[in-house]
Structures are given as structure tokens and as C-alpha cells.
Image (cartoon, one colour):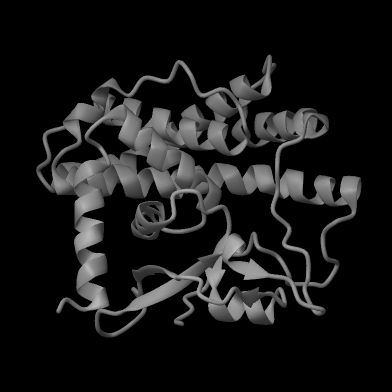
Length: 259
């Protein structure tokens, strides 16, 4: 009988082989990954494979200790590889929908783009990524994605070229920019039509998939962190629904927690 680690490894390999087979497959993954943008690519892929609609995943202990929430009876954890372990093993995340409140629960400060916040977000993106006169949030997000992809392209493409994968730089940049833009737009609830994923057909080799997935995940996280830095405090002031306790922030980097 296969072990849980073997089952999850098979699931990962299957999903990994499918993810760039079509723009529909890739964008469905990107939309899911945008909600868990602080996870690395391999964890995003496994969360997507097991729970594509998960919106906020944390380890068992963090839900309990930081937010005072308990895991629902019978809830199934989302298994991902524990890269911090000396030998191969799994750790488990639970989505917020797998938990329930207690008398000691703290609000989970998830952010959502509101129309009232758009001018502040656009201004911040213009300032930090050095572009001007955005006509809309969509235009600002596309400009931010272009800048992020341009600035980070050399490192990722050089690594890919060193592995001997025959994808030209222009095609890699096009796929990367569109992928980062899709994650930014998706997380902010903006129309994602018009992005081109034509070069995606070139990304079939494992090294190419790993490179594009890892680069997209890491670069989109940079942009989404900047957006969250504006939205979270403004949203907190607007609705006064977030906890005031220092450290109780879902937007922190997720630590390795083993269930």
C-alpha cells in the first residue's frame, strides 16, 4: 500500500505535468495561487491540486495559537512537502473554511480590494515602480507586472539558459509578464481578459515549468505584498474588523509547521 508521501508525490508529478498544457490550466492555477501568494510554487501547486478554492491556509498550530481557531472535526489537511526536514516528509495546511471560531478567536485579517482604496493603491504602485498617469487600477497593475518582470528577468532566464532549455528570452519574458499580471489582477478582482499566453506551449520540459512557476510565484508575491501594505491598514481603518494584537497577521510569511 502506497504511503501518504508517495501518494502526494504522485499527485504533485501529475499536476506538474498538466499545469502548462493549456492557458486554461495555467490560469486556473494562477487564480488559485493568487490567494496563497506567500507560498512557494511547489506548495501552491499542491494546494491547487487538493483544494483549488482555498483562500487562506495555515498550519494546525498557527490557527490554534495565533488566531484561536480550532480545526473542524473530520477536516482533511492539505499535504505539502516539508522542505525543512532532513528527510522527505509532509506537513499540513488547513484552509480557513476548515476551522471555526472559539471564545478566544482573533479576526483573520484577509484583504480585499475595495473601490475606495483604488486611488491609494494606484498612487503607491506608481511611486514604487516609477510609472505615471495610470488610467485605472488594471493599467497600474499591468505596469507593475511589466516592471517586476523586466527587473527580475535576467536572473531567472540565466538560470534557465544554463540548464540548456531552448526557450528564447522574448518568449520567456512574455509568459512571465502575463503570468505575474494575471496573479495581480486576479487577487485584486480586476478583469483578466486580453493577456496573451501564446508562449506557454514552449514550457513543457520540467526545468521550464519549474522556472516559470517559481519565477511567477516569487515575483507576483513582491507586487502583492506592496498592494497588501496599502490595503490592509486602510481596510482596517475603514471597517475596524481587524485584530489590534501585534503579530496576529495572516499576511506574515507562513512558517514551516508540521501537523
